Length: 133
Image (cartoon, rainbow, N blue to C red; front, side):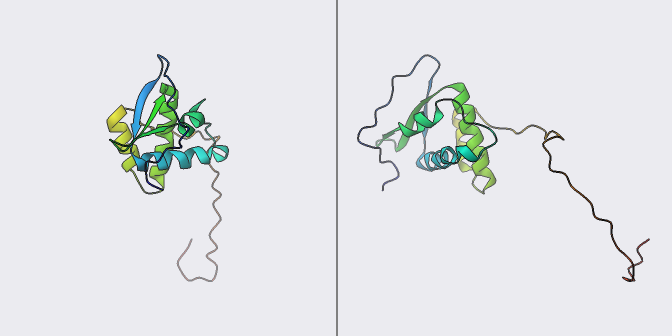
């Protein structure tokens, strides 16, 4: 399937005043669809309505961009998805989104309550001759 092939019945909803037109590259849309597809496995829930916006995105064949109208919260959720995608090795999608829309995800400090506990095992130096004291 071509990188920019919308479903025939897809139409772009008329946006409200709180929506902004977002034009995503095919690689960004692929990463966003992957993110939305794993929504049930995430600790941070997706912004309300984002799944529907992704499902009904329309492709502009002239510019090879996917068109979505998103709220600020939805754009922040997309930035989070691109940040997660960046952790798998590709920063391009997040970098382009930040450059084009000024929205980026910056993780805050991890709360000690959420941080995984680390248990240190005592070192057994008996009989190793390593000079352990």
